[in-house]
Amino acid sequence: MPKRRSGGLEVRLTRAAQRDIKAILNWTRKEFGQNAVARYQALIQQAVRDIGIDPERPGSQQRPDVMIEGARTHHLEFSRSRMGRPNVKAPRHLLVYRRRDESTIEVARVLHDALDLPRHLPAGFRRGS
Image (tube, one colour):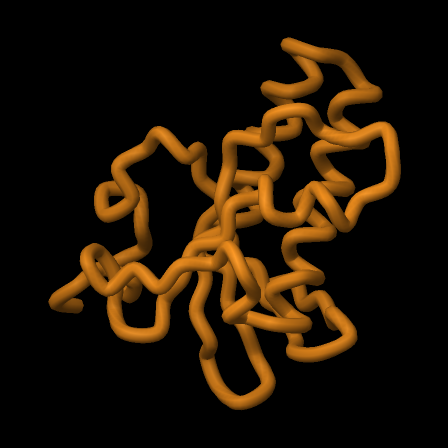
């Protein structure tokens, strides 16, 4: 699992999150071109840094309705203001993550905001697992 130090906590991306990012960027390339890929990739990186600095940052939400205790979502929209220009106009994805221990955040998935979250989460993130 790749690790990214964020000026705060270590943020680890699961294989599923890595696949999500690759698929998002491939789709973005096909639909909007390479410049859009660079912008969206930078926004994802900023969001990962943001949750590493403050996992409970404004805009993040605890989701006890669908996930185990401590799991949260952070919509990429809330990291746009921390980006330089040019920026992503209307991001549609969110990070699904949880604190693993005192020094580590685990990003389980990077999902489109219209998806049914419980259906797309790893077993360890589902309620009752």
